[in-house]
Image 1 (tube, rainbow, N blue to C red):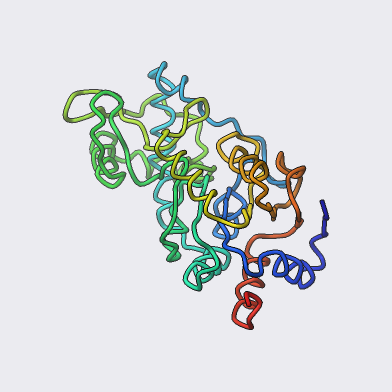
Image 2 (cartoon, rainbow, N blue to C red):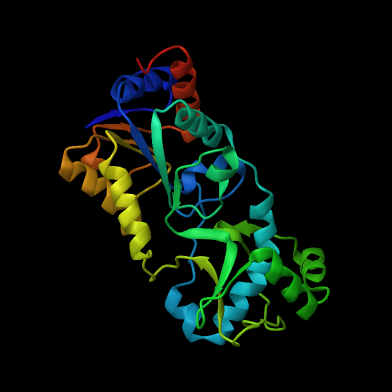
Length: 287
């Protein structure tokens, strides 16, 4: 594996351009893809320690659910208001040119779709939908927001005025006092409502995984962008590609669990590298 340090961004763009030339790419993106849009990540070099709620905690304890929904009620609109960064836009441009054939993202922010990418598989779901764990009825996060606001009048204003609001990954706001928050249940059956997001301790739906494997099988190179590949939901596709003899390139600040499989590892930012690729594409690097 060849490693290239971040200061030589033009050189890294050239090296990656050489590797992708003539190949159909699938991008596998993680939280580092969205940090330039203002969404923090879990494991970046400058990230504070985070302890995400697990599926077992959410489903097994009403207090955990109350704490989650109170935080999410403040934080989700921040994520909804974020806009794609230069890296998202460059990746969408590469898809339109035919070089990128699909995007597998571990992010739930929908920024690839907002940027114009069309062949996107949201491995972990999205912040914008909520489902009932009993009857599977789905509603939009907007609809739930109206119900939570009605059940908790003045909550958002009182918390913001008292402490300000720090946003954590996955659309949560960092607040501690949530005991007075009221949770609402499914209007159809009274079941537990949960974000349509794959939590830690929960499995990615099998049809989604199969579609992702098929996407990898059709490509000539897997380009990992902004993921430490700590969780198996992303790493398995890198291992699958390597087993098939499909080259893997990784762009990430810091080590990843997939470094041993990489033909090229760039210690650089996603926006910088993708913008360089898109610019070189316009100059004919793909031929």
